[in-house]
View 1 (cartoon, helix red, strand yellow):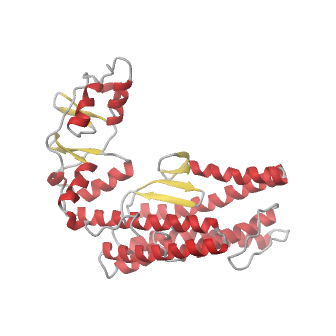
View 2 (tube, helix red, strand yellow):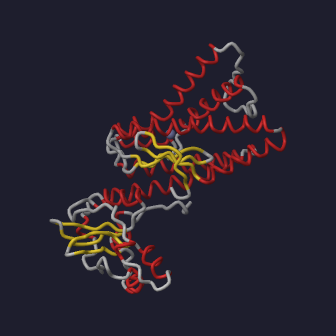
View 3 (cartoon, helix red, strand yellow):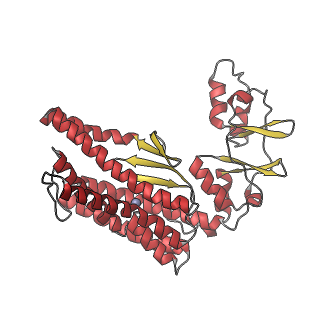
Amino acid sequence: MKWSLTIAKVFGIRIRVHFTFLLLLLLVEGEWSEAGWVAAAWSAIFIVATFTCVALHELGHSLVAQRFGVKVSSITLLPIGGVAALRSIPQKPAHEIAITVAGPLVNVVIFAVLYAVAVWVPFKVPYYPGLMLTPGLPTSWAELIGVMLLVNKLMIAFNLIPAYPMDGGRLFRASLACWLPYPRATAIAATLGRTISIGFVVYGLYQGLILLCVIGVIIFFAAGAEEKTVRVHSALQDVGVGTIMTPVFVTVGPDDAASDCKPWIFQRGQDDFPVMADGYLVGLLTREAVLEAARQAGGAARAADLMTKDFPCTRPDAPVSAVHDAMLAAGQRTVPVMEDGRLVGLLTLDNISRYFTVHPAGVGKTRTGTAA
Ligand SMILES: [Zn+2]
């Protein structure tokens, strides 16, 4: 996710904080001006404690995913929760169920541990029964433990609501996928998710719960976006890279001026350029690098100085679905296609979307997030 800062790396997974997280500083600042620095410090401790629980919840999903061979590139913390970026879709419904259950299970464990601490400590920890309580920000360790018990209880309850793509919705989809094809199961789960999200917005507006409205809107669009991803993925499973790659493309030499590629970007519609030395692929010059070189005075920067050397390649017989997943996860637009050590083509996101323009059957019924 763009606009995020990596704050830690656990089991090879980057834990990132999205810049919108800074909005929470407003809460701390508000406490500071209203109730002084002690109250502000407690609100900061509360935020850190809450998002530690969110990060642990996402780590629960991620570690089980990794056990099933699903790579997880990062966990991003947003003011409304966390997102674990899985690089591929779990292959079996049973795997998806295990991955999904692991998140809320972490909150159950945290709840149990905090409950044991609350019983054991010499001071009285307040217990907030039910879910719809707003006890206010904690001002002591006892209140912090009490509020964190409530937070974890809320996280468990909220994630059991079958509003896809929240955890409960994923469980619903996975159970449907035991009987139905994956895209059909996703479509049903996404429809239910959107319906519930509208309920969240209406109830939020009625009760003045702005956060619930925001979550409702996000779920609504996320359900549509994930449904589209699944449809595209399943339609691309039977298509080989060789069928849709571009076999004709422009290459550059390491000593060529990077800015020379600029006309090809609009004349040929080619975004990224393989850098070839003695017939071998040595790098990839991206559109951004070409435009940057063109902006620099003189425009003489060499392709070799601006190219990236770290990029995945694929084969003509690989299924497009797997490559497409990797491209989306890495934010990569172009993947070189190699056969027997030779560069034979380029697979681009543009190739994939053009494929669907010509063969709309696969995703013809796709409903995007913007369609109601
Ligand atoms: Zn979760």
